[in-house]
Length: 170
Image 1 (cartoon, rainbow, N blue to C red):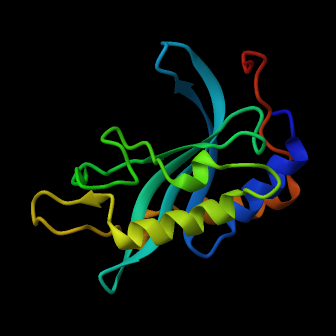
Image 2 (cartoon, rainbow, N blue to C red; image 1 turned 180 degrees about the vertical axis):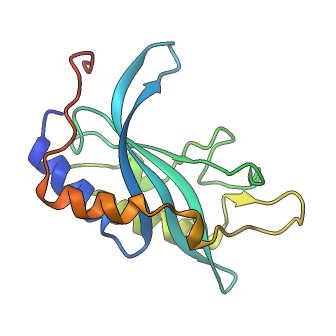
């Protein structure tokens, strides 16, 4: 991670956000050209209001080594009983989030908290996921979020970010 202090601040705010339930990991990200890199990833949900009801949309936020100077890679990750809505203008069929906020990402004016608010607002207009079994848009219960979310939030406050192995390069 090039900008460790900036990343730590952005990730800490993201984990502590009231409209998300997220935990931090390091996992390999596979690019379309077949290469992969170990990246920081925030996994969890972003809350939204859709047609008067609260929904938790499952997401993954991948942070490249030059975050926050470069926009994160953001995906909606449907659970096994969910599908990406073919009518979604904000999410590609593969789950890639394509909000204007990401296209105009520019540090220091852009951050994860603002991204989550943009996602929540956009997903409240048109839900990016639905359940095929009931033809209704679906919600994940908060119980589906593991207790590791709270642990990650607490442990990140005073801990250094996970060390990226030497194979983390651009």
